Length: 171
Ligand code: ADP
Image (cartoon, rainbow, N blue to C red; front, side, top):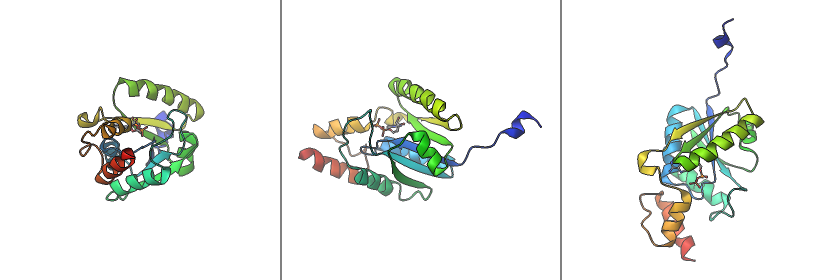
């Protein structure tokens, strides 16, 4: 038997983890591109994160924003999780974790996460899509800051997200 015949192709289901507080057009760009490459995309929304403190939007609303923005994509669904990403991937039967990569800072963090995840679960592979140039400096925290100071965020987030951001931040 040749070595290559022993390779079992990875599943066609991928997990795109993140806090999505809230989803931006940059996230959506990655999700849409993933949906064109894989049979099924599970957008995994962190319920709690040690890296980030409290979220602006609750888990239900973050999930709703994603479901609404991806309603035209039949192979995309959103689910909450509060375990290790690799455990969540196993639970939904995905062998691939797919993430978007923006600047150098993302790279450093993702390299560390990749190594930790590989140690936990050598059977699960991470795949990265480079951010599209128009979104490479777009982050949820940047959008929130812009919104606080009255900046125009129309082209950065879906319409309902923009409206809710303005409401929340006015309080
Ligand atoms: P953020 O860093 O904006 O708070 P998340 O923690 O929700 O985002 O990130 C989820 C994933 O989406 C990460 O892999 C992150 O690198 C990626 N991502 C976030 N914004 C963008 C963007 N503008 N373009 C490409 N990928 C992105």
